[in-house]
Length: 336
Image 1: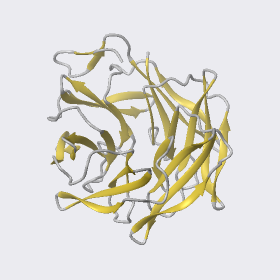
Image 2: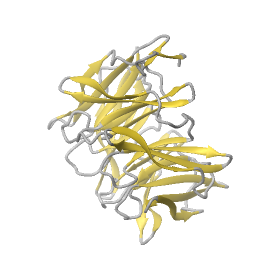
Image 3: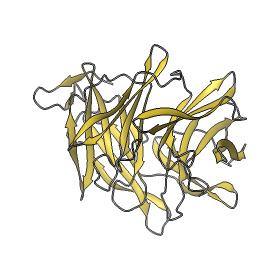
């Protein structure tokens, strides 16, 4: 990415070259296909970011896009929301009061506020630190801060969801235990964060092309999907909470498709009521997709799209109810 220049008095980003573009893809009703429902080559901000996130940060009832950016070591934030056939900047801050470094950025309702919050996990000399940001009094503030959660900061992946039927969002830390897959789950309660679940061996290996979360099996809890490459074919393992522990609920060494992708996404794209997986891939310069869902005890290919009519390049891929339809849509952020 090009070097960021901060525009004095505005708190937004002006890139030395490039503006921020956005495409949004959503299901065509009753046709089981995705199409472009919104496209803009300039959202009025630059494309530089330390992270891109999606959630209902302001309580609008729609999914919004958060652009976290580095302002000379301070953490800045822009939040975008669809309004009719346009996208508006609804939050703009050049300094959230914390630094911009992180080992991971996550979204969740950590404190039970009813709004999406932003979790910044950071390395404190090998210890795991955490900042949580959310709306308070009409602005975004630091709601929780800890320099040491009592665990190390290394991880294969960081994920969020209600993994243990606690009724609140938790943070999952997947880690490599000498080739075995380990897991720590963190939960917020009464102003503090504690380790709610830990395992040094989930019974599977650590290799993956992607780690995803969702209620893929329709059980009412968040599950973890480990997508992996089996000599060019796509394998999958799904883990979920069972009687206070996390176990393997589904496994397949071949879903009938290849393992290559430009992005892996999850959401309820259809009226199925459960979370599904979308595999976006580069089809000789055009953007294609495969759509998987759980049915009759297995993950199966639901849709295949040969060409979405756009290119596969992106700064970030996000999913959410951006259009207010009630179904998940896909946002492709790009620099023009």
